[in-house]
Length: 473
Image (cartoon, rainbow, N blue to C red; front, side, top):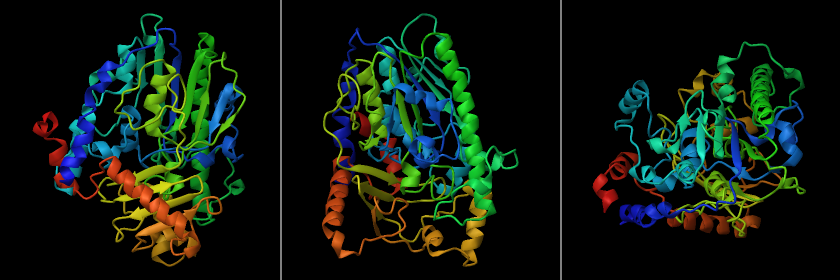
């Protein structure tokens, strides 16, 4: 019965996407500037004045800083599946990192470790990417150049997806949607660029309370800030090209990151450091922006409907996200926001979480796996090896050791207003029973509403997600 529920509600809406129509009077250009692996709190427009970002800061002149944008998963491939489809990854079979890969060597290694093949969810494949909908309505779409959507994306998604992709390659003057990804801030750059000249002084950095305040931590943080500065220079070149072509003033420009920071307890962590991301939107000059900050709870599943809304295209009924801008803006603001974790590469995991603006509730289904999962890829980072050594030798403080706790608690509850780094689990504090019970109920309702296959082992789920007969039925 549970398996049937997983498919039923999704299939009833799959082909609604074919009915989209465009308002011919509204065709603005849209540019996305996407950093990899960066948490919100590394940036000056969220209160950290460690570095000055001259180019990104230009977007603030007629832009809004969004305080409440969140990735639905604290890792890249599932998050990108949410962005391109407007759906929660755990509702369409794209929640496990990675489920799908283009690279044969990666496939062979993981298939040997996991005992089942890489797979592409047939359900995700049948949801028309919002970029394809844009193309069908007269837009030129380009992606420079990362894909990695955790399922096999249709070739119709982009006019051009390559290292040379740009609006500048279109043959006419049609409106465009162009994405630029900046790998310079990716997790891997913390060790790849570890010995390059730093652009900030490590001694001037403020170390968060869950890390030891020592030279290794400070150096790693300095590398990340230096990488952000390099990304700012690259972004500046794109902004300059837009200005030279008289496109900057009248375009929407989105600046954001695909999930939280490159460090341990950031990427792959269900905490705010792993899911809360920066977002600035610069609006066309004709729209005079007065309110410069927005506090709404937003999710990456909102991007697809929002882009269609600001370009005057009908929003498919299947989308689980809500447009927060444009002619079809959803007027109902979220009271609750949901995040999730499943397998991270070779390490199985299963976590679900819900938060209001003040409180957050986390449910850990695999309590015998610490939050500090033993991830082979991340072990290349000097900071990760350093933290593991300190933990093994009982040299971490109480706060620093929480991430390594094994077994971890089945439930966690945090007051984000007074504990923004989620270090004080108050799940047993009876003063918060009302709030805890409410968030428990909200999480249960969400799991049921999106038909989350949370009780189905991935090895069994693979068969269901790749069964063409099931899809057709």
